[in-house]
Amino acid sequence: MRTTIASTAAALAAGLVVGLGGPAHADLYGIDDPSDTAHGSDILALQVLNGGENVHVTTIHDNLRRDPATGSGGIIYVDTDKDDKGPEYVFTAGYFEGTDYALSETEGFGPKKWGDRVEHGDYTMRVRYKADRVHVTISRAALGDPGEIRVAVRASGTRTDGTSDGLVDWVGERRSFTPWIAQG
Image (tube, rainbow, N blue to C red; front, top):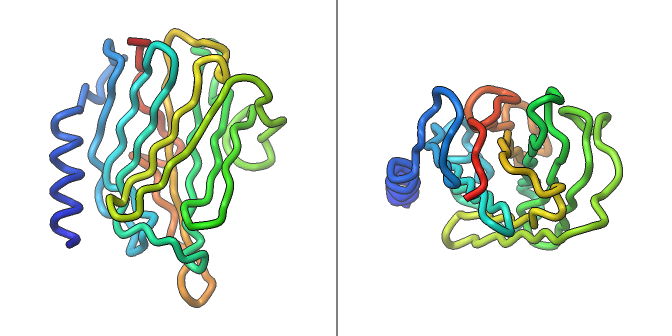
């Protein structure tokens, strides 16, 4: 099962990689991410589509589960302003059954920087446990209709003993963004 998931993630990412050097001049970006943690929240691949009306962020994981004991959740930081260092928006969500999600304004990384919830536009999340896939859709209106975006994505979870040390997985380096992705 793990080989199939990893192969699927690798195939998806291989077909979508725009490149890591410099800005992306396309509306679609994808990257493969190594298996970093021994937890279902581990991100194996990321796909970002900066579409005409919505931004779509899809992550592929290793063994997502519905069980709240997993503590699985994710954060998507969205940078919409090249002149303002860091992200302007943060999407936070639990990946186990019964949790919620929210899009908020932010002045940087970490919960102390998060501000008010976004009250305009729409956003949704769908977790597909059998496919180990999380899909987030954010309307361009909710993000202030930016021409280009970039994202930084992390996921985390909890062990059965309640600890979570070492169960944080960033796509790429900690707090690193994708290249800028143009609206397509």
